[in-house]
Amino acid sequence: MSILIIGSIGLDKIENPFDSTERTLGGSASYLALSSSYFGQDVSLVSIIGNDFPDKYLSLFQQRSIRTHHLQRSNDFPTMHWHGKYGMDMRYHTTELLELNSLIEFNPVLPKECKDREYVAIGGFMPKLQGELIDQLGDCTKMITLDTTRYWIENHREDLLDVLHKVDVLSLDNIEARLLSNEFSIAKAAKKILSYGPRYLIINKEGNGSLLFYDKQVFFSPGLPLLQSFDPTGLCDSFIGGFLGYIAKVDDVSLPSIKRAMIYGSTISSFSTEEFGVRGITNLSEEQIDDRMQEFIEMVQFEINIEND
Amino acid sequence: MSILIIGSIGLDKIENPFDSTERTLGGSASYLALSSSYFGQDVSLVSIIGNDFPDKYLSLFQQRSIRTHHLQRSNDFPTMHWHGKYGMDMRYHTTELLELNSLIEFNPVLPKECKDREYVAIGGFMPKLQGELIDQLGDCTKMITLDTTRYWIENHREDLLDVLHKVDVLSLDNIEARLLSNEFSIAKAAKKILSYGPRYLIINKEGNGSLLFYDKQVFFSPGLPLLQSFDPTGLCDSFIGGFLGYIAKVDDVSLPSIKRAMIYGSTISSFSTEEFGVRGITNLSEEQIDDRMQEFIEMVQFEINIEND
Image (cartoon, rainbow over all chains, first blue to last red; front, side, top):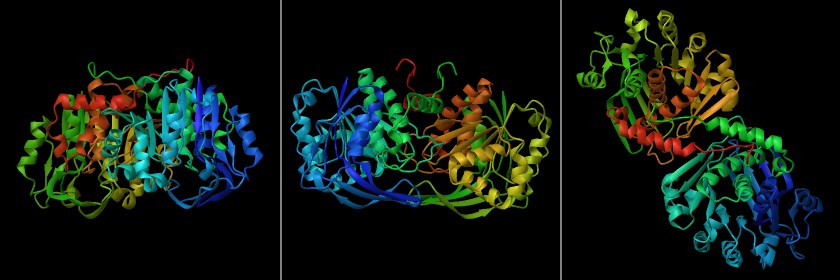
């Protein structure tokens, strides 16, 4: 199966109380593409980079067999730049600076081979453009996931609401979910957001696992307590990358498959948060992934039969 | 099978930003006894009440078929009194007042029928006395659970450490776990606490589920996101009540049984947190419990096979 990743690419500055990094590869598309590349599917990346984008990061995508020939490059602007700062809890950040730069020029006309991809992950960027890109997709599309961030919820709310009924899976963190719904209770927030259109809503509770809401039900995929969470940047995107990578591999959008995909999402994103930026997801072995999957499975699996107990 | 509950009984004042209640039944033994009473086993309660203890609460225990004839009553002191106050997060409390009152006189000599109980839950009270009571138990005992609170960790640390190697299961919330271990990371805290002696450690992460640590492994039982958490007082105790009630019913202390018991613990304690004090666990139907169990099961169960995927 084939996967299309559409999103931003950035050169980020990330700080936490213990360390910091500058001009590190970031942006939703980077996390989505790298995370989804571990499932042996054909991954294409549609995004825009600036006139300062280092070749080493292009090579990084190519080493993971991610198709980069549909990347636009801006002549006039540098690459998008985000500067985030995490507090002592190592979970919540403030955005110190967001310079859209080259992202302003992002307005791709999808070539036919991109329109025909079965599985599409759309990262957080201008909601109006997210909608226009979805409208270009062909009939082969089996699942579209969408992400957004606080910035777009706060500044482009109406455009965002227009997009939500066009997607199958919406992915948010708990702060974004509260912001979008104006509800503090995550359960109430989820109910309201599902009424906006997406069939599935995934809420990542920083460090406390991920919830899948659908109809009136909920499924939970835990966070690993033994994990050293060092940088949660890109957690939602690397979760969705692993999630959609698995769905594409098995080519099955049924609920049982989606539940399994949640565990793969947790697995891949757990590697992502162990190191700054995308470093944790650039070079994983199959064995590392299987071992961690096993940890997740052992954490929640039990045999039970209410009738007999 | 038979269950012995040993712990404090109190008349509590509980406040949160939305409501408050006074002289409501509390104390570890109340939550433990009521929660464990839903599994059809023979439950005995060993505790002390004061000269002001209302008959209606004695009747409440008796209605749940909990044996109360080993309850001591102090002639000189009123019942233990705890005044706790929850903040806007509805999770964390401050202790405004703790008057041990009658609990000071608590020093039971266990009668033979209590010594021979198979399953024993010891709530949080003076650690030295917890140890002395455990020493009185006979050879029939198949599992001992122990709880404690911040007050005992901070003021009777050495006595508490002496008790820990005498119990099978220690139950703490995450703040207590950090306080006892001097570790912020829950994983490191758990490792250290297991080295103090208990075979199993259960850590309740207020509102974010419960973790079971054993050897180098961990099992997770989630919190219900759809739940209206109104009063988390007694969460750990009602969890252990449900946990031990199930273990006693199936009379099986194997790891798979303990994992199932975690889900029962989550189920019963979820009812407890919906209302002030013990009100949520005084009159549950089998159907209510089964329905909520099903919610928990649906939240985490999936079929997966790494080899085939």
